[in-house]
Image (tube, rainbow, N blue to C red; front, side, top):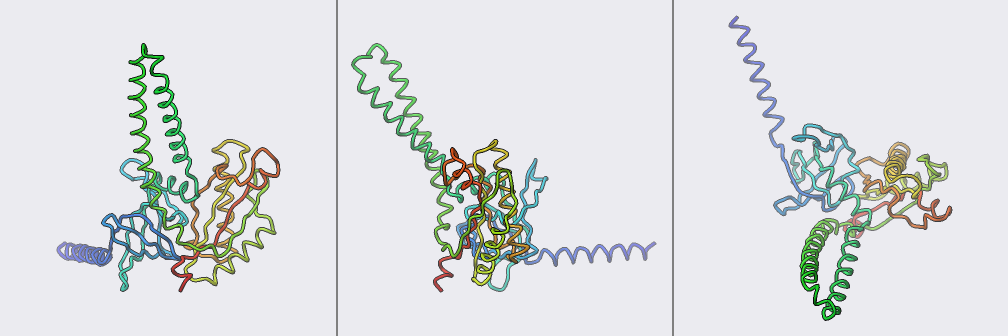
Length: 310
Protein backbone atom coordinates (compact mmCIF):
# COMPACT_ATOMS: atom_id res chain seq x y z
CA UNK A 1 0.00 0.00 0.00
CA UNK A 2 2.80 2.35 0.94
CA UNK A 3 4.67 1.44 -2.25
CA UNK A 4 1.57 2.31 -4.27
CA UNK A 5 1.34 5.69 -2.54
CA UNK A 6 4.98 6.41 -3.28
CA UNK A 7 4.42 5.53 -6.92
CA UNK A 8 1.40 7.87 -7.17
CA UNK A 9 3.37 10.63 -5.46
CA UNK A 10 6.23 10.20 -7.91
CA UNK A 11 3.84 10.38 -10.86
CA UNK A 12 2.23 13.52 -9.44
CA UNK A 13 5.60 15.19 -8.96
CA UNK A 14 6.57 14.28 -12.51
CA UNK A 15 3.40 15.86 -13.88
CA UNK A 16 4.00 19.01 -11.85
CA UNK A 17 7.57 19.27 -13.13
CA UNK A 18 6.38 18.74 -16.69
CA UNK A 19 3.70 21.40 -16.35
CA UNK A 20 6.17 23.89 -14.91
CA UNK A 21 8.63 23.10 -17.69
CA UNK A 22 5.98 23.63 -20.37
CA UNK A 23 4.83 26.93 -18.87
CA UNK A 24 8.33 28.24 -18.28
CA UNK A 25 9.15 30.98 -20.70
CA UNK A 26 5.55 31.31 -21.89
CA UNK A 27 4.40 34.86 -22.62
CA UNK A 28 1.08 36.60 -23.25
CA UNK A 29 0.64 39.81 -25.19
CA UNK A 30 -2.48 41.88 -25.86
CA UNK A 31 -2.73 44.60 -28.47
CA UNK A 32 -3.52 45.13 -32.14
CA UNK A 33 -1.73 44.30 -35.38
CA UNK A 34 0.18 47.24 -36.81
CA UNK A 35 1.43 45.42 -39.90
CA UNK A 36 2.18 42.01 -41.41
CA UNK A 37 5.36 41.01 -43.16
CA UNK A 38 5.52 37.47 -44.42
CA UNK A 39 5.30 35.20 -41.37
CA UNK A 40 5.59 37.97 -38.79
CA UNK A 41 3.15 40.39 -37.19
CA UNK A 42 4.09 43.71 -35.65
CA UNK A 43 1.81 44.09 -32.62
CA UNK A 44 1.40 47.28 -30.59
CA UNK A 45 0.67 46.18 -27.04
CA UNK A 46 -1.79 47.80 -24.65
CA UNK A 47 1.27 49.34 -23.00
CA UNK A 48 2.33 51.04 -26.24
CA UNK A 49 5.28 48.76 -27.02
CA UNK A 50 5.91 47.14 -30.41
CA UNK A 51 6.34 43.37 -30.31
CA UNK A 52 7.20 41.07 -33.22
CA UNK A 53 5.08 37.90 -33.34
CA UNK A 54 6.17 34.98 -35.49
CA UNK A 55 3.64 32.61 -37.09
CA UNK A 56 4.50 28.95 -37.60
CA UNK A 57 2.71 25.89 -38.96
CA UNK A 58 1.75 25.06 -35.36
CA UNK A 59 0.24 28.47 -34.56
CA UNK A 60 -3.46 28.13 -33.69
CA UNK A 61 -5.88 31.02 -34.27
CA UNK A 62 -9.24 31.05 -32.48
CA UNK A 63 -12.15 33.25 -31.50
CA UNK A 64 -13.61 32.85 -28.01
CA UNK A 65 -17.38 33.08 -28.26
CA UNK A 66 -20.34 32.41 -26.01
CA UNK A 67 -20.75 32.98 -22.29
CA UNK A 68 -17.34 33.48 -20.61
CA UNK A 69 -15.68 32.64 -23.94
CA UNK A 70 -16.19 28.91 -23.41
CA UNK A 71 -17.18 28.30 -27.03
CA UNK A 72 -14.01 28.41 -29.13
CA UNK A 73 -14.12 28.76 -32.92
CA UNK A 74 -11.00 27.72 -34.80
CA UNK A 75 -9.93 30.16 -37.49
CA UNK A 76 -7.29 30.44 -40.18
CA UNK A 77 -4.35 32.81 -39.93
CA UNK A 78 -5.73 34.62 -43.01
CA UNK A 79 -7.90 36.70 -40.64
CA UNK A 80 -4.83 38.30 -39.01
CA UNK A 81 -5.07 41.67 -40.73
CA UNK A 82 -3.66 45.07 -39.69
CA UNK A 83 -5.84 46.81 -37.12
CA UNK A 84 -7.21 43.61 -35.58
CA UNK A 85 -7.17 43.31 -31.78
CA UNK A 86 -5.74 40.06 -30.47
CA UNK A 87 -4.12 38.20 -27.61
CA UNK A 88 -0.97 36.20 -28.32
CA UNK A 89 0.31 33.33 -26.21
CA UNK A 90 3.72 32.00 -27.10
CA UNK A 91 7.38 31.66 -26.26
CA UNK A 92 10.06 34.36 -26.56
CA UNK A 93 13.03 33.53 -28.78
CA UNK A 94 16.63 34.72 -28.57
CA UNK A 95 15.78 37.78 -30.71
CA UNK A 96 13.08 38.97 -28.32
CA UNK A 97 10.26 37.96 -30.66
CA UNK A 98 7.28 35.85 -29.60
CA UNK A 99 6.84 32.52 -31.35
CA UNK A 100 3.05 32.32 -31.37
CA UNK A 101 1.41 29.17 -30.06
CA UNK A 102 -2.16 30.48 -29.74
CA UNK A 103 -3.71 33.69 -31.08
CA UNK A 104 -7.14 34.74 -29.85
CA UNK A 105 -9.13 37.34 -31.78
CA UNK A 106 -12.44 39.10 -31.23
CA UNK A 107 -15.09 38.24 -33.83
CA UNK A 108 -16.84 41.62 -33.61
CA UNK A 109 -13.58 43.52 -34.02
CA UNK A 110 -12.66 41.26 -36.94
CA UNK A 111 -15.83 42.23 -38.79
CA UNK A 112 -15.12 45.94 -38.37
CA UNK A 113 -11.48 45.43 -39.36
CA UNK A 114 -12.47 43.57 -42.52
CA UNK A 115 -14.77 46.38 -43.63
CA UNK A 116 -12.15 49.08 -43.05
CA UNK A 117 -9.24 47.25 -44.68
CA UNK A 118 -11.40 46.48 -47.70
CA UNK A 119 -11.64 50.25 -48.19
CA UNK A 120 -15.28 50.77 -47.20
CA UNK A 121 -16.18 53.76 -45.05
CA UNK A 122 -19.98 54.03 -45.37
CA UNK A 123 -20.43 55.11 -41.76
CA UNK A 124 -18.13 58.10 -42.08
CA UNK A 125 -19.82 59.18 -45.30
CA UNK A 126 -23.27 58.90 -43.73
CA UNK A 127 -22.15 60.94 -40.72
CA UNK A 128 -20.76 63.69 -42.97
CA UNK A 129 -24.03 63.79 -44.90
CA UNK A 130 -25.97 64.06 -41.65
CA UNK A 131 -23.82 66.98 -40.52
CA UNK A 132 -24.50 68.81 -43.79
CA UNK A 133 -28.26 68.22 -43.56
CA UNK A 134 -28.36 69.46 -39.97
CA UNK A 135 -26.48 72.61 -40.92
CA UNK A 136 -28.99 73.31 -43.70
CA UNK A 137 -31.85 72.68 -41.31
CA UNK A 138 -30.35 75.11 -38.81
CA UNK A 139 -29.95 77.80 -41.49
CA UNK A 140 -33.59 77.44 -42.55
CA UNK A 141 -34.74 77.82 -38.96
CA UNK A 142 -32.65 80.96 -38.51
CA UNK A 143 -33.92 82.59 -41.74
CA UNK A 144 -37.56 81.97 -40.82
CA UNK A 145 -37.32 83.13 -37.20
CA UNK A 146 -39.38 86.32 -37.69
CA UNK A 147 -42.24 84.56 -39.41
CA UNK A 148 -42.63 81.78 -36.86
CA UNK A 149 -42.25 83.60 -33.57
CA UNK A 150 -45.43 81.88 -32.37
CA UNK A 151 -43.62 78.57 -32.63
CA UNK A 152 -40.55 79.76 -30.76
CA UNK A 153 -40.75 76.91 -28.29
CA UNK A 154 -40.70 74.37 -31.12
CA UNK A 155 -37.75 76.14 -32.69
CA UNK A 156 -35.87 76.05 -29.41
CA UNK A 157 -36.60 72.35 -29.07
CA UNK A 158 -35.37 71.76 -32.62
CA UNK A 159 -32.19 73.70 -31.95
CA UNK A 160 -31.56 71.65 -28.83
CA UNK A 161 -32.07 68.47 -30.82
CA UNK A 162 -29.67 69.71 -33.47
CA UNK A 163 -27.05 70.51 -30.82
CA UNK A 164 -27.55 67.10 -29.27
CA UNK A 165 -27.29 65.40 -32.66
CA UNK A 166 -24.14 67.33 -33.42
CA UNK A 167 -22.55 66.09 -30.21
CA UNK A 168 -23.49 62.52 -31.09
CA UNK A 169 -22.13 62.93 -34.61
CA UNK A 170 -18.85 64.37 -33.31
CA UNK A 171 -18.54 61.42 -30.94
CA UNK A 172 -19.15 59.01 -33.82
CA UNK A 173 -16.59 60.78 -35.97
CA UNK A 174 -14.05 60.53 -33.16
CA UNK A 175 -14.69 56.81 -32.78
CA UNK A 176 -14.39 56.29 -36.54
CA UNK A 177 -11.15 58.27 -36.64
CA UNK A 178 -9.64 56.32 -33.75
CA UNK A 179 -10.65 53.02 -35.35
CA UNK A 180 -9.39 54.02 -38.77
CA UNK A 181 -6.01 55.15 -37.41
CA UNK A 182 -5.30 51.52 -36.57
CA UNK A 183 -5.12 50.83 -40.31
CA UNK A 184 -2.57 53.45 -41.32
CA UNK A 185 0.01 50.70 -41.80
CA UNK A 186 -1.83 49.54 -44.93
CA UNK A 187 -0.08 52.30 -46.88
CA UNK A 188 3.29 50.78 -45.95
CA UNK A 189 2.95 48.09 -48.64
CA UNK A 190 3.93 48.05 -52.29
CA UNK A 191 1.73 46.07 -54.69
CA UNK A 192 4.13 43.74 -56.53
CA UNK A 193 1.51 41.87 -58.54
CA UNK A 194 -2.25 41.57 -58.74
CA UNK A 195 -4.91 39.62 -60.61
CA UNK A 196 -8.69 39.74 -60.69
CA UNK A 197 -10.50 36.41 -60.91
CA UNK A 198 -13.99 36.53 -62.46
CA UNK A 199 -16.87 34.11 -61.75
CA UNK A 200 -20.11 33.03 -63.37
CA UNK A 201 -23.47 33.78 -61.76
CA UNK A 202 -23.85 31.93 -58.45
CA UNK A 203 -20.54 30.08 -58.94
CA UNK A 204 -17.34 29.87 -56.92
CA UNK A 205 -15.52 27.64 -59.44
CA UNK A 206 -12.19 28.77 -60.88
CA UNK A 207 -11.87 28.77 -64.66
CA UNK A 208 -8.70 27.19 -66.17
CA UNK A 209 -7.46 30.59 -67.35
CA UNK A 210 -7.82 32.01 -63.85
CA UNK A 211 -6.01 29.03 -62.36
CA UNK A 212 -3.10 29.72 -64.67
CA UNK A 213 -2.80 33.38 -63.73
CA UNK A 214 -3.03 32.47 -60.03
CA UNK A 215 -0.24 29.93 -60.51
CA UNK A 216 1.95 32.57 -62.13
CA UNK A 217 1.17 35.02 -59.34
CA UNK A 218 2.14 32.42 -56.73
CA UNK A 219 5.40 31.63 -58.49
CA UNK A 220 6.36 35.28 -58.55
CA UNK A 221 5.37 35.76 -54.92
CA UNK A 222 7.48 32.87 -53.68
CA UNK A 223 10.57 34.62 -55.08
CA UNK A 224 9.93 37.67 -52.89
CA UNK A 225 11.09 38.30 -49.34
CA UNK A 226 8.48 38.93 -46.66
CA UNK A 227 5.48 38.98 -48.99
CA UNK A 228 1.81 38.59 -48.12
CA UNK A 229 -1.07 37.78 -50.48
CA UNK A 230 -4.31 39.69 -49.92
CA UNK A 231 -7.53 38.01 -51.12
CA UNK A 232 -10.94 39.78 -51.14
CA UNK A 233 -14.15 38.32 -52.57
CA UNK A 234 -17.10 40.21 -54.12
CA UNK A 235 -20.43 39.53 -55.88
CA UNK A 236 -22.92 41.49 -57.93
CA UNK A 237 -26.18 42.60 -56.29
CA UNK A 238 -28.24 39.64 -57.51
CA UNK A 239 -29.74 37.80 -54.54
CA UNK A 240 -29.97 38.71 -50.87
CA UNK A 241 -27.15 40.39 -48.95
CA UNK A 242 -26.69 37.30 -46.76
CA UNK A 243 -26.39 34.97 -49.75
CA UNK A 244 -23.99 37.35 -51.47
CA UNK A 245 -21.77 37.52 -48.40
CA UNK A 246 -21.57 33.72 -48.25
CA UNK A 247 -20.93 33.49 -52.00
CA UNK A 248 -18.12 36.06 -51.90
CA UNK A 249 -16.57 34.12 -49.02
CA UNK A 250 -16.77 30.87 -51.00
CA UNK A 251 -15.06 32.56 -53.96
CA UNK A 252 -12.26 33.93 -51.78
CA UNK A 253 -11.81 30.50 -50.17
CA UNK A 254 -11.59 28.87 -53.60
CA UNK A 255 -8.75 31.22 -54.53
CA UNK A 256 -6.97 30.69 -51.21
CA UNK A 257 -7.25 26.92 -51.53
CA UNK A 258 -5.76 27.01 -55.02
CA UNK A 259 -2.89 29.27 -53.95
CA UNK A 260 -2.04 26.96 -51.05
CA UNK A 261 -2.51 23.61 -52.77
CA UNK A 262 -1.36 24.38 -56.31
CA UNK A 263 0.72 27.52 -55.86
CA UNK A 264 2.60 26.34 -52.74
CA UNK A 265 1.88 29.60 -50.92
CA UNK A 266 2.05 29.02 -47.13
CA UNK A 267 -1.31 29.81 -45.53
CA UNK A 268 0.43 32.09 -43.02
CA UNK A 269 1.43 34.36 -45.93
CA UNK A 270 -2.20 34.95 -46.93
CA UNK A 271 -4.56 37.58 -45.53
CA UNK A 272 -8.27 37.73 -46.34
CA UNK A 273 -9.76 41.05 -45.16
CA UNK A 274 -13.27 39.77 -45.72
CA UNK A 275 -16.12 38.55 -47.83
CA UNK A 276 -17.54 41.83 -49.07
CA UNK A 277 -20.61 40.50 -50.89
CA UNK A 278 -22.17 43.13 -53.16
CA UNK A 279 -20.35 46.03 -51.50
CA UNK A 280 -17.39 47.56 -53.31
CA UNK A 281 -18.67 47.25 -56.87
CA UNK A 282 -16.34 48.43 -59.66
CA UNK A 283 -19.07 48.72 -62.29
CA UNK A 284 -22.80 49.35 -62.48
CA UNK A 285 -24.97 46.49 -61.26
CA UNK A 286 -27.72 47.71 -63.58
CA UNK A 287 -26.12 46.13 -66.65
CA UNK A 288 -25.11 42.58 -67.49
CA UNK A 289 -21.55 43.63 -68.29
CA UNK A 290 -21.28 45.56 -65.03
CA UNK A 291 -22.51 42.62 -62.95
CA UNK A 292 -19.94 40.39 -64.65
CA UNK A 293 -17.18 42.80 -63.54
CA UNK A 294 -18.43 42.73 -59.95
CA UNK A 295 -18.43 38.92 -59.62
CA UNK A 296 -14.76 38.76 -58.72
CA UNK A 297 -11.96 38.05 -56.29
CA UNK A 298 -9.13 40.57 -56.11
CA UNK A 299 -5.70 39.10 -55.33
CA UNK A 300 -2.67 41.26 -54.53
CA UNK A 301 0.92 40.39 -53.66
CA UNK A 302 2.14 42.94 -51.12
CA UNK A 303 5.62 43.60 -49.76
CA UNK A 304 6.40 45.97 -46.90
CA UNK A 305 8.05 49.13 -48.26
CA UNK A 306 10.81 48.81 -45.68
CA UNK A 307 11.76 45.42 -47.08
CA UNK A 308 11.22 46.44 -50.71
CA UNK A 309 13.68 49.29 -50.26
CA UNK A 310 16.40 47.13 -48.76
